[in-house]
Each structure stands twice: as C-alpha cells, then as structure tokens.
Length: 112
Length: 113
Image 1 (cartoon, rainbow over the protein chains, first blue to last red):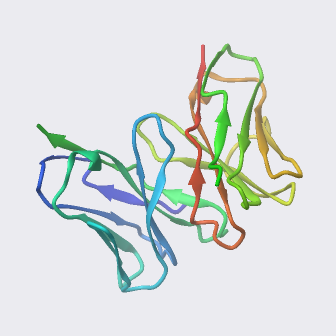
Image 2: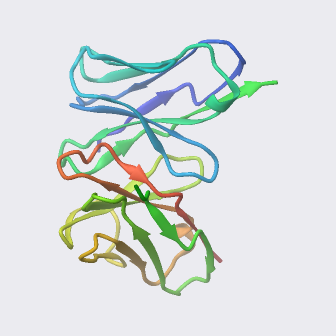
Image 3: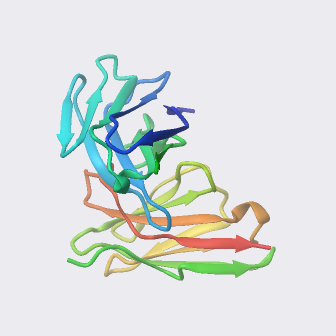
C-alpha cells in the first residue's frame, strides 16, 4: 500500500533556528497536508497543498508540494518554544479520497 | 463555533470486553472519520461516516463498527478487545469534498489489559 516516509524522525534544535523536514513517497499524491500534534491533543491542520509546485505559507511555516508529486517539505523559520510537537505529513490514498495516509511524524524538540 | 469533542478521554478495559467511544462533530460538519493512533506512529484510518452511512473503511476487522446519528455525532464500537487495540482513538469531522482538512478531537486513550 501507499506509504509516506518522513525525515528526520526527530530534531533537537535551539530556539531561533530554522527547521526543515520532508516527506516522500514512492507513489504520487494529489494533495499534501501538514498537521501538528501536541501532547494530549489531536492533530491540527497547518497547511494544505493542492497543486504540484505550490508553495504556501502560514506565518513562520512554509510548505511546498514537490513537482514530481512524490514529496513535500515543511520549513519553520525562527523556531520558538511553542513549535514543539510532532509534525505529520498526510495525503489522500489513491483508492479513495476519504482515507488519509499518514507519515510516522517528525518530533521537534527545542533545547533549553 | 463548537469544536470536536470526544468521550471518554481515558479508559481501561480487559481483553474480550467491548468498548464504545463517542464523538460530537464540529458545528456544520456532516462527515466524521475515525482514526487509531498507536504510540509513536501516525494515525491509521478506520472508517468514515457521511449522512449516517459508512462511506469508506480502512484495513480494520469487522469487530470495529460505527454509527453516525442525525445530528452528525458518531460512535465507534470495538468488540472482543485485544491487547493490540490499546491506542489513542481520534475522531475528526470535516465538510464533504474537503476530507483532507480534518478537525480532530483530543482523542480517547484506550488501554486494554
């Protein structure tokens, strides 16, 4: 079945640093979604991408839909403590639009 | 605008028991999806309900079943619980045709002993 591979698995960064993470697949996705999950909470949608090559920002977050439609990346500029959490990429399965396939997440930890 | 609410937040069951988890969708959303999230993993799609009917199902056995009510709230039922059913169960609501843009509740943490 379709899979999404996220890297890195975890990141330890200093406050103020820029962060970059990505998501790849061996199959094409027509939509890429980035969610953030904090402890004890459900995931929250950060950015939705619908067109190959699309670059979209949400405050300090920027995400791009890869031209091949097999990858996407998420950048966070000037990280702050509240950026801590797990970032997931997700996309609709080829067999159905209602089922989202999720990566395993990138855990962001900010060093004190 | 009321967000997605789930109950209970935590529960402990033993193998072989049955459990019912409940979800109220966000105001105006008529589509509800359920996901299972094991520790350290991304969510796995269980099924989706739209207009009180199951609209699609992931790779879960029939002992996972659900309902959607006329007010769009939903239930997830799991029979014959197994140890591997221990997970966070997430409910998400969405508008039809925007099923990638999910609004999640806080989840119900199920522990099976």
